Length: 47
Image (tube, rainbow, N blue to C red; front, side):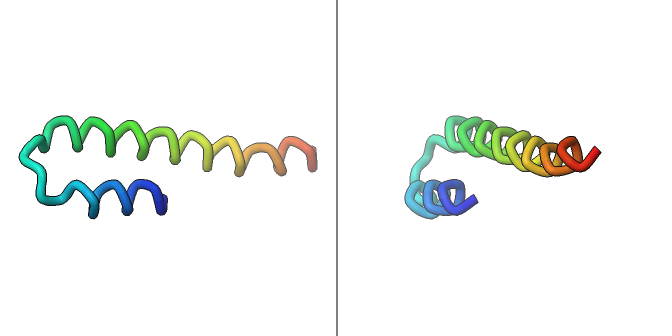
């Protein structure tokens, strides 16, 4: 999440909003996916 915030603030002044939106959405999906996998791993080991 820190990478996402740093990228957003570093590029806030740029005009290329579409590219920034795409990059942010990819980071967001990747972060959600990793978080979901991280939550599932302990549950699998307990079962």
